Length: 264
Image (cartoon, rainbow, N blue to C red):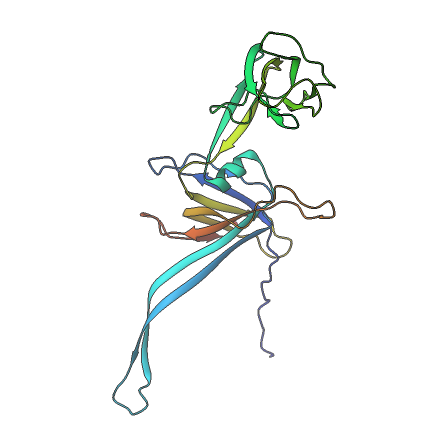
């Protein structure tokens, strides 16, 4: 009878990646679907203590013991959602409310040719957007003329002082406007350089048996570039890249790989 060989288990891995951030007490808070992650890899490096016998002239190695295991990796995500930006920046996410409160007498010292963001303060450095009822006046409340003395981008809440108009360098002008009411998300950096949590991959392979991966304790830290502007000929989507550290949890192993239940 010929020898029976087993069939090789080949795989083209696909799946959905979830991250469960830890709170300040190290407790899981619920898994976030990171969206499309075209690359998640784990790399294992080992350190060994090696012993060589001195009983022979050649000094041959007679023992090798693994003393350290370091599990790292890389996660690439092209779902550039605000929560993912917050993870990449190790920052915080806020819901900002823009009120439809009329602003009068926002005084700026200006220069011709320069741009000015309405509503920009230390507390709100990006200012307001989508404004109506915009006026620009001098200190005596005499109005300037739009198109001659200033230009307005109402959608973005920006004003440009026109060169050659009635407004001279060093003049103080009064901006008045009413922002449109609405809410939007803001992400800002903090003092941290990484975030900690648990990582789960639910497999949906293009080929091969589905096996799910779970890492109870990992840290994510930003790596690589974040394109803010690219050339018009570029056809690559923005991707957020993370360095991954897989750590040994106190009451769990570093990495689990589970198959799917089958009926006996």
